[in-house]
Length: 189
Image (tube, rainbow, N blue to C red):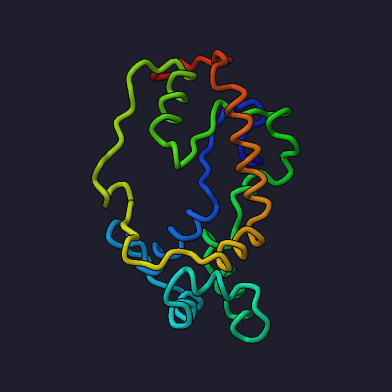
């Protein structure tokens, strides 16, 4: 946000931190395939040698000893897993009061939130989202273990700021869901 001009309208997207972690883990484990092909760093290679599943990494995250240290190093080696979504808003203060976005798109409500954004921008035609899983970078996780209670508790601890930010975003959206748009952008401008 600090890189945008101060009066520039903006929107952003967020995702439930646990879903983001799981998706990030398996995306990097696949090296982004099939849509992308980003080879592992040496740190990621070590991570996936040690931790076969997202649950294994999350469970070990706050463990004492070398396995816990390797889990910590693993989390820090993959930005999408270790970095918080709130990191994009450092030094923004209360952005909802000082510099509110046009809208926020939640991954879990992508189609509905995108439609609302388009309405708030004055764009009358609906968005068309792809159903192609490769183009959408969507993956099937039915063959991987669910996250255990220990793993979820560790991720809630690791991403505590993101969980608070996500709740804050949800509340902000709920308060404005029926409010008229304060902004109209010229299409094609």
